[in-house]
Length: 367
Image 1 (tube, rainbow, N blue to C red):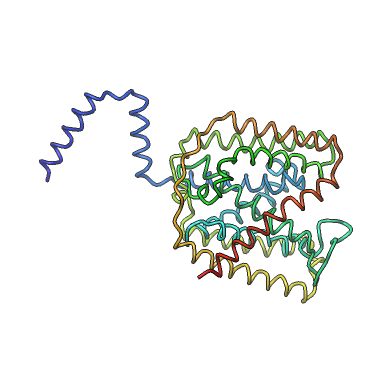
Image 2 (cartoon, rainbow, N blue to C red):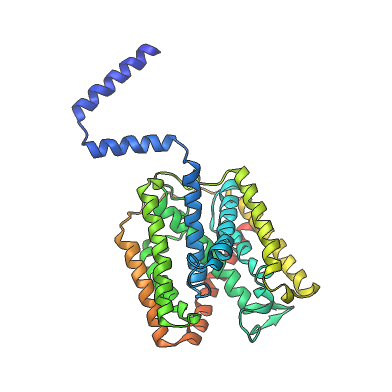
């Protein structure tokens, strides 16, 4: 056996002398082989988790204009970012560790993510409008719940950051293959339209064009900087699953998430907590969503992940997207069409959200 090994090593040396690979290509192959066989260091994992949390915070809070400077203000750093960081990381771990990511399991996890708008912010009961809910049934603010839970947090704050993170910052492609083929073919166009809408929507809560410019540019620049550092460090040589928290780490994250719920629930509008009836409805919603997530994860183990090609990455693309987002925010401020944007946005996002909900339930109950 040792003789065969020596012979193989000699043959490898002779073949490399005849082939004479260019230095950069040879070095790249060696680096990829070494990286593939090694687990990512803990600091790499933590950095990747921070990037996912930053993307989640950006699409949920900066887009809505509710927290214009989440990466600079104390409230954003100490309260807002940990909320999105812990939720994203916890449900990311659950979906990937116990099954395969599917649209059904990801969306069910995103719905549970969005339900923080109950006990943490009380918006599910009280609405985000000072005038109260437009329509309330059983103490539940219907339109606010549909918008925030069914789409905003489930898709923008959870599914979209994971998709972007895996596609551009890792070597794996499990999530891209979940999208319909017509979406994959028009991915860049659809994301461009999404950013234009998101930029326009920042004007709904922004007090001035200057705040819109500073908010969108500074927050987008933070994301761009995180991506640059990650790529320079070679983080994109790891797969999404290699960057997952371990089971032990997931338990620690769960403890911090529970502590956050206890602390934030008392800190944020404790006096607006409703009576037994509306709370019971929320408990029932939680129970239904937990059932939905468990069944989708169980069914996902039988699914096959579609093969997808690696997406080419150019720094011109994120820079273009950042400038487009900032420009759209300024245009939204100048047009003063906040009411139109709110009504249009509700109609625009509720239908994809309801379709994903239907898809998730269908997968959960299918035999």
